[in-house]
Image (cartoon, rainbow, N blue to C red):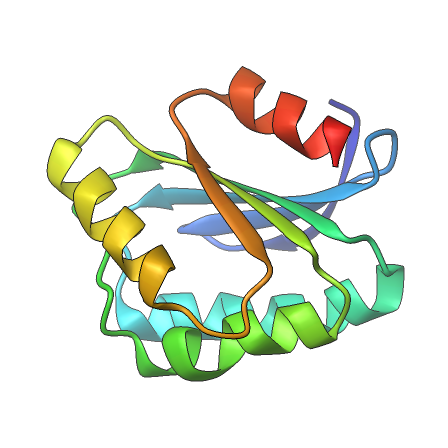
Length: 132
């Protein structure tokens, strides 16, 4: 994967993969609502600028579990990235079973979001994005 770093924080990086024509969002460690809202707000203009339609969202380095009650993310961000052109969102889960169950329930509850699929490995997620 040949990428260009667009955004970097201690808890996440956001890159563009020019060869595959998708964005790569890599989450690191424990996150809180402020961190998540901050980077997601920074990502939206980059999505609009580059116009790619796919995101590879990597949670393998996340500690803790996904918080499905993030108002900005659930009510606005997924809808906004779809309006900005994102059509496919591959979500690589971490190994925490509870994280995975909460995550899949959260995804089912979203309205107006792009197509989102959860994967156990990067290889599976990348293969799905390539065929989209």
